Image (cartoon, rainbow, N blue to C red; front, side, top):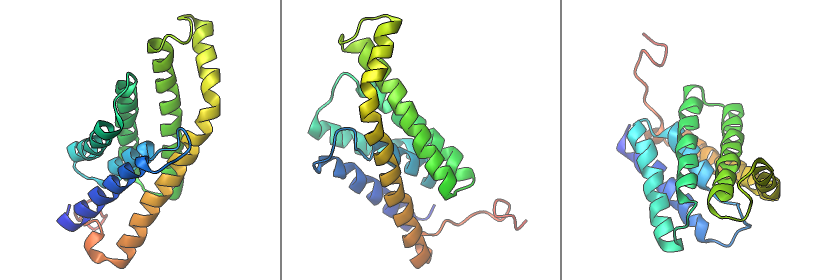
Length: 179
């Protein structure tokens, strides 16, 4: 990956992570979109996990950690993996599907964490169902934020690539179908 492309992608990820400090509705966050974007755009898989994780850690040092952080970060890592799938054939449909799948994963895993660790629901199947039902009103904001921030990140970068050849991905001939 060329250095300019990498720097712009990292800058976009850091800017999106910083947007967590702008007042916003509960569960309307760039986390899922950052992970999806990173998995799609950063060709080095280690960087795809490390760059957004570092951005999240910096933000969490400022805003504070909580008991559900391991669940949130697990969702984050899974969304990076979804980005690897989106990368195989980038399209609006795949990006949208990836964002919605990431939202579903976040809802499922973090609500399980709430049920398991916070002690607000009985540790039974009915308690778990009650926890998931209570989380439904927040799910809408998760989906909307993942779609919104994915649109901003992917759309913004597509526009930047269109106007700057330095940002365009250079593919090996075999991968580009020219071998």
